Image (cartoon, rainbow over all chains, first blue to last red):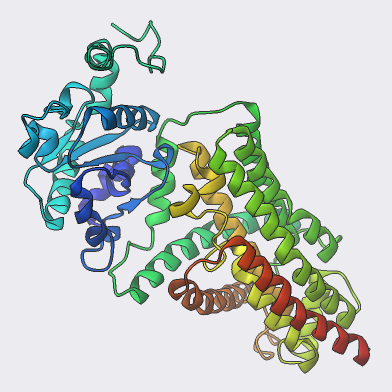
Length: 185
Length: 311
């Protein structure tokens, strides 16, 4: 542990613990997931940064969307994101969630994921190498330090807007809103 | 003395249990040729879990996990940690009953979450308990018959005068049988059927997040401490080390050194267990039951017969 971080630990243990213990739920329908097994196993060993994969979104605090998002998988992404407990962070991986990537003109592609759930950071590239995941995570550490990784707060504040975007895409959604009427501004 | 032990022994159990969890992650990482997380990583994880919001699925969901944690804490009071013990009555019989409390609490909690993966995990947990309780009971009956007492404290005291149980040849076979079922009691690979993250998305704790997950991690640490501590107390002589502590027995330093020797013995058992844990894949549930009811049961049964013939 860095010795000059002890004062930060004493000041806000919850924030620092969130920083150094990312339990990740991977969204594995895109091709980006091919970079995940090397990054969590022996070659690149993400566990030395405290990053381990978990099986259930309830136990996670980082959501890594690995690649291409179609209209059908977006539903699953939204439900998974809403099941995670706060504070939670999202990283979109590869160029497809940013602007559609090489499938930008397909009828079925979500070209900007940021309209439907808040994203804290993007890792650009097609495909980014496993090193890029670690660079992304260290950038996320800096954002958490500066309190700028506030995606879950934005989701709470602008929930009406996000829900409207989701409903515009899906029509009738078969699950109730995450936040009740009083929370929606 | 008793009052101090009442507060100190759960504290030691939680701290050492968390340390063992971190150490086991580090050692398995080194066996896999990885660098591994820092040793205090489970503490960071618990702080993070406490800082997160948790979603409750009803009253039994909250009650079950607390019940399981309390069950493990009560179990600590029956376990002599070195020369530190709180409850001397009851002994191994009470220990056997109380060992079922923590699986029961987790089952109650997982059942209330109404997740299909949790239901599969709970049924596996009870099947696995059923599988390892048979050889465990045979082992404990052999030990109780040999020493003619049910008290854990007395068993440790007899070993202090007559040598470790593992060294006296009558109890070697029950000792081996207990070591074979130890991974099943701790719920680690090759008996990781209950959690099985790749298969049933971490089983009974699939719906645990935030504070519930933190309590589960603490319970897991305590459970690990109890499983290893029982082995050390019964077979490796608790605090005794070849009469090394005889000159200073009764003093405060004797008690502290006794606890340290006890913990070092636990550490050695843990590291030997980790070599098995790190390289073997997971059994399926019926393979695990077939194994547990065949070899450890057979060895424990032969050990029991030998003990009865000697007595």
